[in-house]
Length: 136
Image 1 (spheres, one colour):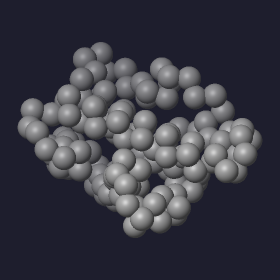
Image 2 (tube, helix red, strand yellow; image 1 turned 180 degrees about the vertical axis):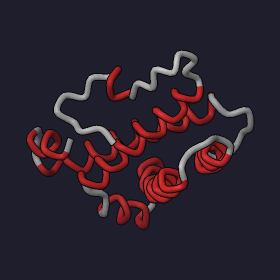
Image 3 (cartoon, helix red, strand yellow; image 1 turned 60 degrees about the vertical axis):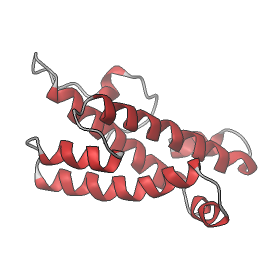
Image 4 (cartoon, helix red, strand yellow; image 1 turned 135 degrees about the vertical axis):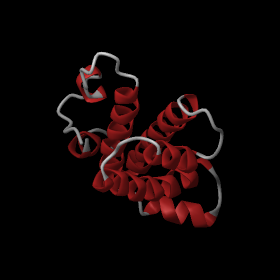
């Protein structure tokens, strides 16, 4: 994804593309977590509940939690307006965004596996075509 975003468009629009992608990722995760959790709450609480109540190894749980907390700061900054939040968005890089994309795939995979009655364990990256993009 890093090379694809850099290869298309000028650098003046690069930040807008990053925020758009980040917001799409965030919307995807909030919908996924909200629709597959019997309780209500903020996405970070729904994710914690998901990770705490299913058999997910400690390293994966810890990595996802840390990444999601970092991602959530950027996601919230991209959805709200203030000088402080614009400064945070300026710190967003394509490399960070790609890490958040990988985190999103991992979270989708965890949720999908919880409902996988056939035990196939496909990744959403196998179903959705990501041309030339590495998976988690």
